[in-house]
Image 1: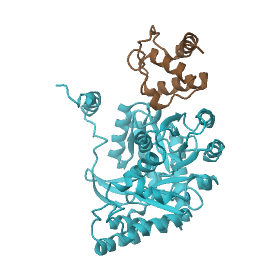
Image 2 (image 1 turned 180 degrees about the vertical axis):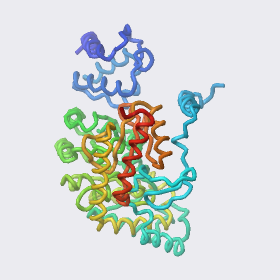
Image 3 (image 1 turned 120 degrees about the vertical axis):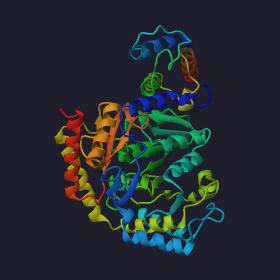
Image 4 (image 1 turned 45 degrees about the vertical axis):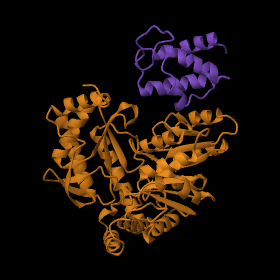
Length: 79
Length: 400
C-alpha cells in the first residue's frame, strides 16, 4: 500500500478515537493534540496492527509522536 | 523554579489536593507493631491486615523464625558480597535446593528481590533483535526487564489469546521469541488461561516465562502455581517467583529445566552486580518453602476465606474485580481516587488495612481497594472484615 492509500486507511481507523474531532495534519501529536492516554494508545495501536497485519513494537511506538510519523512508520513496516 | 523535578509537579499537586481534605496519607502508613500475620498496631490501634500478600502466614511460623535466628548466630548479619564472589553461603544453596524440590525442576537461581528476578532473567535472555510478546497488564518489574534488554517489546490485550496469537504470527522469521505471562494478575486478582496461551506460544516456537508470584504456595495441588493447576507447568520454560509473599521474607527466584540454565549466573547483571541475600533471609526462606510443600490444609482454608470474603462483599453491593474468586486477591473497585482514599481511611478507622491501588499501577485507570487474604485469617476475622466494609461503604456513600 502506498503512502496515500495507507494515510486514507489510517484516517478511517483513527476517526472513532478522535473524540474531539481534532483536524488532523501530519504534525498533529497523539499525546498533545489528540490527548491519547496510554489505554487509548494501546487500543489504537492494536487496531492499526490488525488492519495492516504488522507489529508496531513499543520501541517503534516511542519514535512515533505525530500523525505523519505514524503514516511513515506503517508504510515502512508493510515492507 | 524549573528543574528536573518539574515533571513531577502534576503528581505533587494531586497529592496536595487529596491530603488537604484532611485524609490520612494512604502511602505513608506505619505499622508500629506487628502482632501476627493478620494483625498489627497502626496509629496506636489494633488493625486487621488485609493487604500484605502474606498468603500463607509464614512470617511468624516458629520454625521459620528459629531458622533465621540460628543463621544470624552462625553466619552473621549479611554477606557483603555478590553471589559470584564472596556472597554464596551454605544457606543460598540450601534455599535453591528447596526450590528445585518444591517445583520438581532441575535449576533454581535466587535473586535479592522478585523485582530483580524479572529484571535479570528477562533482560538477559531477550536481547537486541529478539521479540518479547507480553500481556499489557504485566507487573512493573516485567516491563522494566523488557526495557533493560533492548528486545522488541510487543504487548497484547489482557488475557486475549487471539491477540497474542496474531502478534506472534507477525514476528519475522528466525527472530528469538519470548512470551511473558503471569499466573495471577495482582491488581484484579484474576488468573490467566495459561494452558491455552502456552499452547499458542509453543505453536509459534516461543519460549515461555510465567510469573507465579501471587500463586506460589497456594494455587495448584502442590502450591506450584496456576500453571501446575492447569496442568501445563512442564511447558513453562522459566517460572519467576518471590519470597516476599507466601514464603514470608524477601528475595526472588527463577526455576527452569533448561539444560544451559546455569550460565545465567555469569551473564545476568542484576544477579552478579548486587549483594546476595543475608543468611537469616535464605535460611528462613528455605525452611518456609519446605513447610509449604505440606500445607494442604492451609491452602484449603485460604480458599475458603477467599470465597467467603468475595461472596460477602459482592452480596453487600460492592463492585469486585472478578466475577468469581480466582485467587487470594479480591479487588474492590472504587468510583474514583477521592472516594477510594476516603473509603481506605474509613476502613482504617474501623481497624482494617487494605491496599489502595491507583493508576498507573492499575489497569484501565481504576482505583482499587485491594484485599489479599491470609491462611491465618480466622473465619471470624473474615466475617468482621465484611461488616467493616459494609459500615465504611455506607459512611462514605459507596453503597446505595
